[in-house]
Image (cartoon, rainbow, N blue to C red; front, side, top):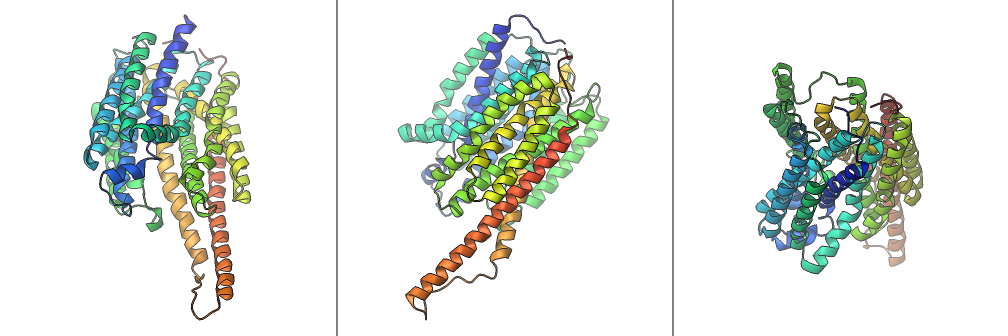
Length: 489
């Protein structure tokens, strides 16, 4: 089906309303960063057992990742407006459950439902852009959607801290309810009922359930709240093994089933696989940056969590700017050029950061803008090489690839760098103020601190060098993305 070109004002209003819903879901992915300590205190969790609060994060990630493929496919069948309404309703219900929770279990359940609904909003809105806009205009729209998604990382922690300071952390969830209602009204007014609806599009519910279960198990297994203890958490290996087994069952089912979650007919698999792999690379680098910049700030620079958040703003501020620019470039030159250039510039930025530790602010700004350049081209490329009746599934696949890249990247690189740090400091002896003069103790202490700081600097340099190489791999894969889109319908 060719995207409609009439009534451009109505189409812009529609995508703006859906983009606002994406921003709402994105903000809630980061909103607990600054209030997590207050939440666990009110729930009666000791401050020295923060790991018990891990399900508040993994629950949201689980819902965010697992439901995307099936919900994306359902949007192909039922229509984008119907699915967006359903997601906003579920998001509001999850918010009410979270706001009224007095124990960890119902709070985790509410967060999981929020994640399921908020995660589906992004690929459904991306697919909506493919429904409403022709290929030559689509990257610009996807750039703005990507910017809305990334703005959540910028505003989420600030929004959470501000609301919690006024009405407590429960208010963060209560305010979601009127916001979701307003977004639903805007979507109802702005979106036509038809886009995305395919009465002949079949849905593989069993395949979607198997894939959701596999992604959920992999998400839980890869998320490690205490990377100092190992690459994976204690439950990681058996959970990942179970996830792989279920994933194999999904593959076998797709091979035998007459109805597939993503019908291979009409898909240009080379470019689609390139979009998938490049999205995983971008996700890995993104998450490593979010985690390790905070660690660097609080260890090597001696800042608190707020100081680390301010340092990270150099990176986060560049993401939405790059996302908009990447969409504009892709609309004129095709997806290959901005994606390739974005990864190359990101590689340069991470090498710059690696050799500049701890003075990393300029490199972070460049890295954010460069990674932002890749957001719209990777989404647009995947939509261009899949049939109209599979756009919801294709958009979900790109987002899932990014999420899995984030989890694998942070699990592998952070734990590897901690191992390198331990190896480099194994022979260091902490000075003790016994049997020596105070002046000698202070001298030895200064030498010890300098050695530890040097090891920390080397550790973070290794991480950001590895991130640079991941960006190089992303650039090479991006060479297989589609070229100019000006001749596309």
